Length: 188
Image (cartoon, rainbow, N blue to C red):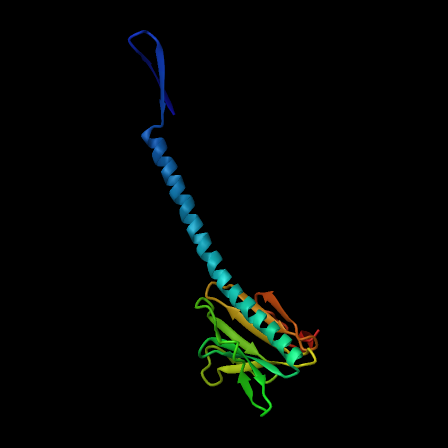
């Protein structure tokens, strides 16, 4: 900041203060750099939140499946269809067929979630495979569920694994890829 001293007609001294052009340019450049870094950080943060949001939504629907199964005393399945990138609940009816629960419309995975696979005692399905694209996790009236793992990830490396425990029917969300290959280990 530069100070200039001027004398007016009455011989009094007046101080004029102001920023130079260079100082103003430097401040503007600094603000632009900070805002650019903030935009990049915010983009990464929102991308990570998309995968986490999917993990929380699937986990919530799985918990609801357990509650419905216990309250109605019927088996309830959480279906995952990788070809349509959707998931929904179905309950076992008296005719022995699983029907979609009418109050639960199919949910869609976020577009940022690109890597998806489900491992159950029956099989493993991957989003990139075309042969088998649909599988399910069954929740039983006694509070148990099929031991299963659902992996959700994106192109930036953000990933979460949902582990469905067998004995208690609970769902746990782990950051990254849960590496236990043993279904006995999942049931703990």
